[in-house]
Image (tube, rainbow, N blue to C red; front, top):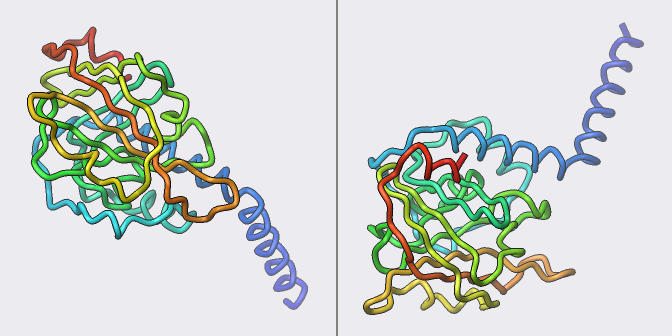
Length: 220
């Protein structure tokens, strides 16, 4: 009995050790799994209450990822975003709750609509350059951003990429007579735990099409 208990304890210690070693890889895998699953869900026009309090945003941790993965999301997918040039494809949610941003992109303002005003989205920048909003670090001016609400496909062309601080919140405001998109994610600084910088990408609306099997392939 004593030997069996020792064996169990050694096994548990080994499992814990492996989890610590591969903590980042496990977290990245779960995030990728969530976003892929959510991208296959049907877009809904119904939205529940969302939070738009930037101060409540937290870093993505193993604990928060596990919680999001094994608890069903309370929010439905309200749209999808794709930036083919950097292989970014994500679901869009209403609001910037931590749960939303671990699954995809979150809207930064209430009642904003695709194709109107300044449509703003936020997303997490992870250590893995290929998940969530991390690919935006490689995006360039002139590349296309595609949005869909299930009924229309909105095409924007990027014309701004720059670094801003987290205090420059005016960038999400509407600009008179402009139909824009604004994408924001963290801009990590080596050795700094909580970076005060953000990557800002902005573009203008260039085309609106009725959603078809052909033009929605960009989101698949």
